Length: 339
Ligand code: SAM
Image (tube, rainbow, N blue to C red):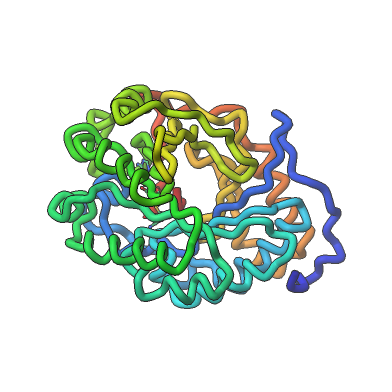
């Protein structure tokens, strides 16, 4: 592990909240910039961008990570915005992958820049990658994301597969009337490739151009997938996260269902999220946060940064308040939080 400034002051102790959840997973959004404008993620009109000065530097991120490691953080996911649009993203991944205390360092990307960067990401030591892909039809992909980049994303996924990334997880936000007619085609990819296809329920976050009328919930998605064959349940591995995982009989890959609304997984949530502008969020689906940037830039000690982690843990609610009718929505944009 890289030496952390003033780390002699940290009183080591794991991050365990009042629900006895061990928070050992930090998801870090390294930029609010994105090269797509997905219906369910980007708001209408111009997206206010963070000023460069507001975004944590890679050194600041590393320092926060080092403090987190002293507090038991063992898993990190780099996300965004689109992480690969940030200069230095792959170097950061390499630095994280070399930290022996971290059991898992992974990347979530929209895949647009993956073909060009997959080998460097692999050489940096990353093996697990999540790519967001909501449609296998070029025109529909363009409608959902605002850009005609399906071929690029697919080429990126194929490149990652050839290079040997495993698992490759493909995240699809299921939306009624938009891509729900492709649920079976997406699931069928698991017969041809060892991919993990994960269907994510749309979450009403920020001011997006999608709304809950497009929502399609896991029970219905799962029922449709089950028409392809028996769904054999798979055990959740320790670092598997919230997906309920299955293998369709005869498939090489897996299907998974992430049901934040229809079947919330708060009781097993082990996550904290660091936004690109240095806010530590105890829950994706709540606007609460602990600011860290002021501490880090105000010459705060590592013990003070550790206290930010502990305060976030204290604030972590037992259960998110988002409801199916969208009564309690999250105001922050997903693009800034990182998913
Ligand atoms: N740009 C990267 C990507 O596309 O994967 C990383 C950031 S993106 C915010 C992370 C994930 O959040 C993506 O898989 C995306 O589909 C998901 N996401 C964004 N908005 C969502 C929403 N309203 N409901 C459910 N998932 C959402």
